[in-house]
Amino acid sequence: MDIGFIGLGIMGAPMAKNLLAAGHRLAVYDIIESSMDALASLGAYKAKSPKDVAERSSLVITMLPNSPDVKQAVIGPDGVLEGAKPGLALIDMSSISPDASKEIYAACQAKGVEALDAPVSGGEPKAIDGTLAIMVGGNEETFEKWKSLLLCMGSSAILCGPAGSGNVAKLVNQILVAANIAACAEGLTLAQKAGADPYVVLEAIKGGLAGSTALNAKAPMMLAENWKPGFKIDLHTKDLGNVMAAAEFFGSPLLLSPILLKMFKSLQESGFGQEDHSALKKCYDLELLK
Ligand code: NAD
Image 1 (cartoon, rainbow, N blue to C red):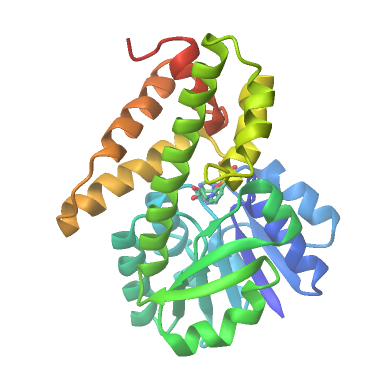
Image 2: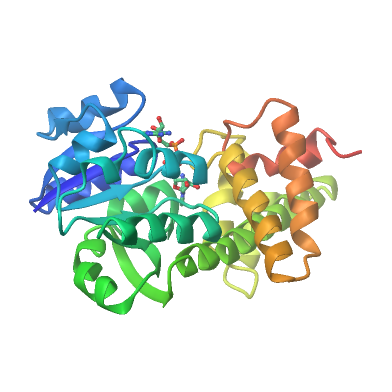
């Protein structure tokens, strides 16, 4: 199948590689031209714009930072919808606000383009392995049509409800991940201050109720002071901003998310926005919120 892929960053590049490996032909686009080189060397066509991508594809996948980026690539000038042929489908796999997903879905419907929001969880390692957890919003028929394609990039794809529901699930995911990493940073700091060996503490607790994928992935990074992203502080701050907006819209109370957002913003203000979200540990080590 001819697939277009827009946004070739930490996640998009390995996801696109998995589609090539599954035998699909790819047209790729990223605003940073050099980001397309690795895929082009594997046989992908380097497109000139999202419109150019759409003209060559039956399906376009977007994997971009936030709502304005997806709107620009899909609805904007030289965007996907300008190049859409009859029967084109759009799957936006970015983590964006549910509101924006609904707006993009409506714009696609108006042009006869079927659309799904299908954000992911699992980070770079699972993007590389093709074992992401994919949470989908849209109609059932469209979901069933594209489910097997989604499973070239993930080990699960679950329809959560109508357009925007994939991104509601993703916001839930991001609250849990942020809280988990922050708790991990706080607990490891206590272990260190108490003179305990944090590696031994981790070994002792990871098989119990506190064990988690986030703990296994992020605690070793904190202890090694390895802040190479993974998932950038800037992007998790964006997700928590989207949590705040969605909670206000739906009248859902928040206690933890505002504190977590404050921690993330303190890291951004200190110049750590491009580091991995495991750098939440610096809120404690550098006493950023004192
Ligand atoms: P990234 O910053 O590494 O990559 C984003 C890419 O999009 C960059 O290459 C950038 O040049 C490109 N881009 C930005 N605006 C564009 C536009 N208008 N047109 C074309 N290209 C454009 O980000 P990432 O980590 O790959 O994350 C992508 C999305 O996936 C985000 O929504 C993020 O929240 C989500 N996500 C990331 C992870 C992770 O662990 N990194 C995990 C799950 C979900």
